[in-house]
Length: 279
Image 1: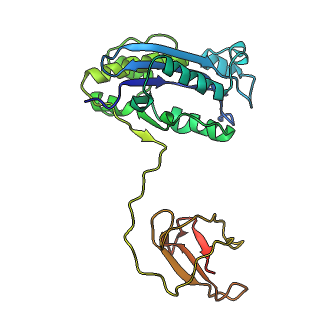
Image 2: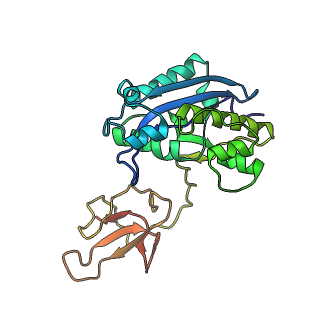
Image 3: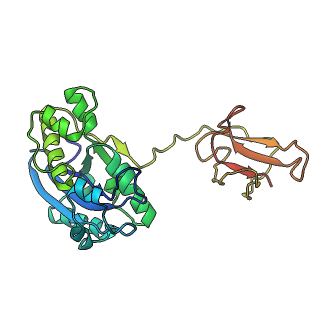
């Protein structure tokens, strides 16, 4: 039994400069390769260039590294349109999105780059990008642990590197071929990374806190750099039981009751941002 019908292998290229990372970094090449999970056939390829908004002029270092030229990004599309084009490409190939898995070499493409840029620009991305297979993990199951880049992994697997390193589409094609090689060795290809939070287990009921005071959300005091979070019956949003206490220090708040998350230590203080005054 296979978990997926198809894999879509991606490898973004982004704006960059020599030295410190450029900010904000933006995707400039959006490539993808579709792989049949049953046969290992490379079914189709997709690529569009993306026009950066905040650093529209590519640095000489970026052009040298990626091979992408200024006129290619000048004629590119916005990231939201690139995502829509990618969806249309998958639909034209007849891909069932619930049986599709994204594959990358490393976690950067989905966990860092795409997530950051979509959040930064307020772009809604397809849900299938929230889970992915970091091919490094099944590769190490087949070939042993060790630090190697994509090109080194391809050669270690006995394959010939094809194309230009740091060309997004060439990198995606080589990653797809490496995926097929790992699959041929019987290594299961399963989700290794996710941006979807794992649901917390239902907490067991606990006795009511005393004194029995109704909790009312109010602003935290100015000397607390805390954001208020909603809580359930006796539990913080993170699942840890809340604890009640009273301000003992002289001042305007002396004698007031408050509630905080029970996840705290005397040396480090609160480990969770939940704080609320009692009514």
